Length: 430
Length: 168
Image 1 (cartoon, rainbow over the protein chains, first blue to last red):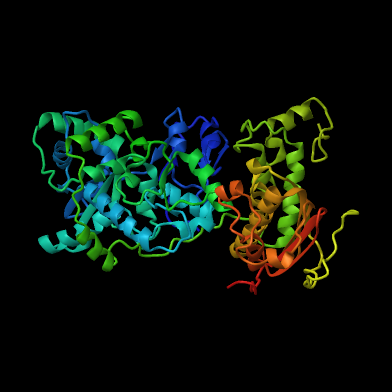
Image 2: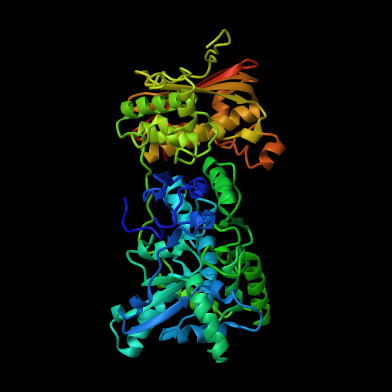
């Protein structure tokens, strides 16, 4: 089931056909064929790991273009909190928001207070929920995608509360339309994103029929111009709305730090996410109420499309929150009344995305599995990825599905050249 | 299996033997007692196999819960066991044959809340006395037999489109 293009695309002019991305991909979605990395839409979760792995800048995010702004009568930049963390101590959020407007947006809209609201709403949800436990945050869209394709049994564990970025866009669009007498569709809301996962979540959202955002610009794309604008104009926008407590959502641990429930953990980085989800799925990870999980090791500050890098950004955010008073800005009664109105609810069911079995027919699938197991016996198990698949098992899988051939393996070909009758499957005709 | 083939204790009525049928695919796994480090791995491997074979999600989910409980039972209580996965045309049958202390009173062990788990096991989140009842609840056919000091044989079936008659 493929709805929209993914947020990552290979540039054929830059890709040299090395296998770094293929080996790094957590869902084994990349094959290198004819010196070009091809991304499998069905398996890709838009985590952006390939962008980080590529040394040739050949995998790029699909972001909005300045021309997209002209499609709307009124444009709003909705910056990820991570944007505030890209600058040093002398650039506070007010100046970042001010600078962003100089880049051509009619207004900017901060989401830190909405982060705090959602933390509060999550607390309320946890206190009323009957499980299954632990509940898992939907903040990181790559985590949600990973669950859909690899851990479908954990879908009932997802917290059915929409993300702060979508809720903020929903609220602001509604109010702006009323205030300015605009049709909601005449307002363009653009997220300033630290990662590819959010770009794809805007294109093909989960839990929503359609995103309340219209597109996304990467932090890396706006950073240079923004820095210039900030230096050129010392002005600052109001930061009255900013919640210092909410700011912490930019980094892993921020979400649970503003929650009341303490029976929670933060899981950082893809490897740990897989470790924990494997165990939740198998039943050996119990007794927790809530898990905040990020595909990027530091949380959003560690996104691929950022400039400062996760360590400095983390320090910047902590510093900012402290300087701004480290307090909450949200009233609990407000959260409760919005909860009653179902304001926070996700709007549509998040469904499993079944990744293709070997065959629909059981007997055929078993035959292919036997074939695959037999092939694997003959493959070198070096997982060198020179064949274009990330490892030997995936090559065997590709072969039985008719997408690759045994001769793609360099070791198999070497044996042929050396005249070893290694395999029945075409090894003897050299 | 071998000379240790357990028999039914006198006072425990054994349910009709679970579905026979053409076995399309079979694989066995060895589970070692006290091997907490690898606890749940056999269940996870079975799950991966059934996913590739296009089994419906719900059948896999129910079977996986049962498999995990049975696997942990071996790890906690038995010396070792052979777990056999048999894929039938419309069902999956799993048989656990263990060597170990056996269960003296199966009817007692089948009641929710009854457990002989040690405090250490309980500290790990096990020993709630839900293991065997949970296996039965998540399977469509279930049978168990045991001989004290010899071992326990557990067999259950999940139908592909099973109604799961045991479910709440």
